[in-house]
Picture: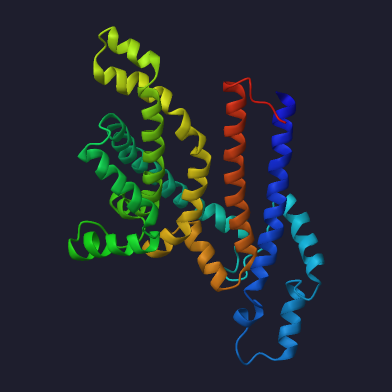
Length: 306
């Protein structure tokens, strides 16, 4: 068991290192940050002076080495756009808003997907099952940015039920949470339906019905409990998708989280902030997967590292 956990932890560290290498390279593809930082009338002397100040005059492999050493110490540098702030300080300042939105989106996804998925399995072939399949199809095909704009236009602009943007009470979270979690509704619902169909045909369910147990207890207590194993498998992926998907949703609704922060940082070519945001997102995603793998190893002793 300890060997399995140790190897999974080493794999996670390797994945984070590879991610740091990728984001370091891709951030610099966007162009020279000096073109954004300096005014149009700036001369070669100014470019040379600022480039030397930020270490941009050094070769890329040297810049990456400096970045990696400092990152291991928790120092991701200072922001080039937001003067007086560290890159990680900005991320930590915006992260609670993103986690709040992602958590609320996950709750909404489960509350919507669970009853639809269970009902679709129990009423297989019915009109409810057909409706569930349509919802699943729409959930996997509608682009998030388009759905967010449509929801904003209908429920915020025309009906005035919700605010169009910003962060505040729960009314500010409804539309962006639905936008962010809509795809996950389809994923969870289809997993629950598939798992429930397998469990409903099992022998122990037939036995509970023969004993005269109420149907709602059979479905919601015994079947759903066993069918929940499959959705748990993709929980780590869903959590990661909700975080990374927040980039689009936060941009549409001007939600002041890390998603909107990274968009502004990319536009300003603020490499320090971009790197910090991506590393934090990758760390959360990889850590969640690691915890799920460890949980599986404890729940099922047959799981071993091969």
